[in-house]
Image (cartoon, rainbow, N blue to C red; front, side, top):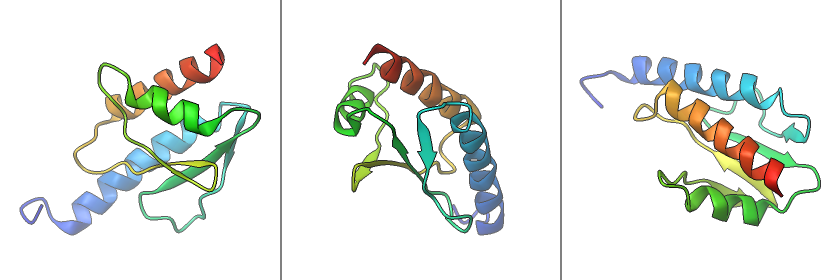
Length: 101
């Protein structure tokens, strides 16, 4: 982490968060709760869906996606070890899971 530099990590994390937010905004059922000054944490709720089932399904994928559930909201925290592809993979799997419910 030190060799990458905190500023570069922060910029990269923000790029991933922005990509995630852009993708989530296209899903009608999503209500993003995160404030503008959120660091690299995105919190959102899903209308008329059981968030705990969604979290379990994400954890059972061939490449499990770890999320946190707080107050019936899903919380995801992209970090420097994630890629844009992993963010898009999360969104694709998430859409599939909520569609199949």
